[in-house]
Image (cartoon, rainbow, N blue to C red; front, side, top):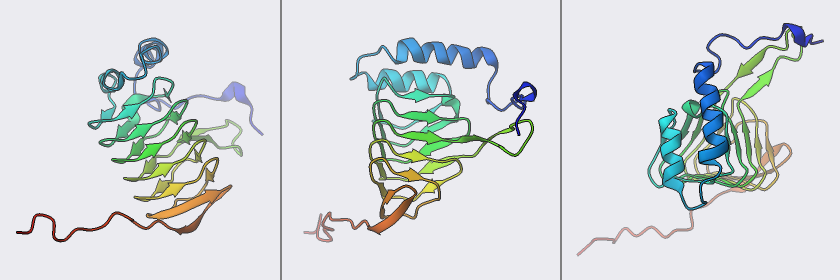
Length: 191
């Protein structure tokens, strides 16, 4: 059983010094959170200022919470919805054209509940390109969701999911394949 008086955060775990961490939390609570909804470039600028890798055309809402932006990568045209939490104790990568909807929680951190010291750990999360995590999806540490996968509303993801799948449930399971319905035009540009 844990004895929390002995808990410590390992050296270097946050990826930055305490002053930078506190400064980010102050900026996030003010300049980021208070910015008008349409100021996506402003929020991308603030995230880049703190070391995040942000692609072009990213939509990130002002109510999003990001623990350590220097552990975040957002691909081109990725969207992150209202009240989403990106708990970046470990790296989070969200691919191009992926959508993390409102109230989603991407959790890279956990504790060893068998340790007397309740040791903290972090494991990266990768959300592939063209994925959609619908509202209120939870993603556990150390998982990958393959390109093109949809995870249904209020699902909990506790195992990595393959690409081009439609998944839902607690735990999330594959329901069927996601098929690209866009017509392929092999004649495009032909004379």
